Length: 112
Image 1 (cartoon, rainbow, N blue to C red):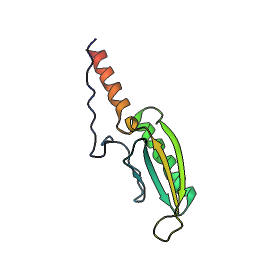
Image 2: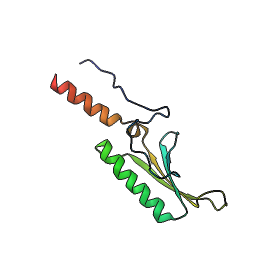
Image 3: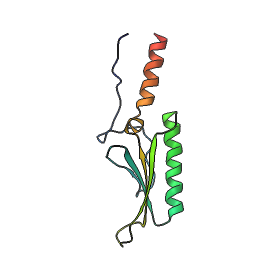
Image 4: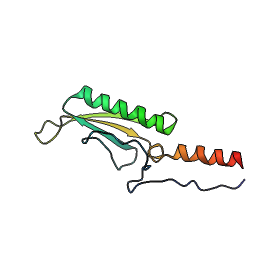
């Protein structure tokens, strides 16, 4: 059996270009191992709702449950930013779309 390299379409931060992005301007996918996907707001339920909505969209895109190893909650009581900071620590391979690429490769091999 010949191993074939899986080609991923990644942006400059190493995540898939078509990964659903958090929609609010305060939220972001960060750049560390087990990447935190951050949701910041002065209202905790709103930050949690946005994180849940993003997680649903990302799992639909991925076609399987996203590997989230932790949910981190922090706060900032300074006057410089939103009070709550919710982070989902997500598997880098999932955010890069590796499961999608593997399934596409398997489908291509099956049709050949």
